[in-house]
Length: 74
Image (cartoon, rainbow, N blue to C red; front, side, top):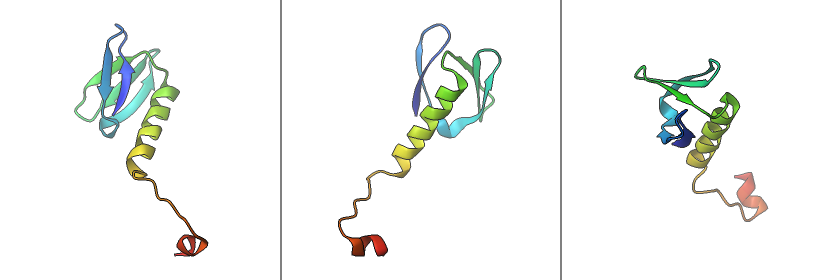
């Protein structure tokens, strides 16, 4: 989940898995799977970057630590 700021300044947390579409209209608009639309202050690129970072954290936790060359070759 990522934190975003609505146009009125209120903080909100959005589940990246539910975002279908991010549009610039001219504000940034998120369209969620249920059809809900949310306007946020962050630019499109920032929303995308936060979703990518979230996915990286989720899919690479706990981090894989390789101690030897033999382990890397497995």
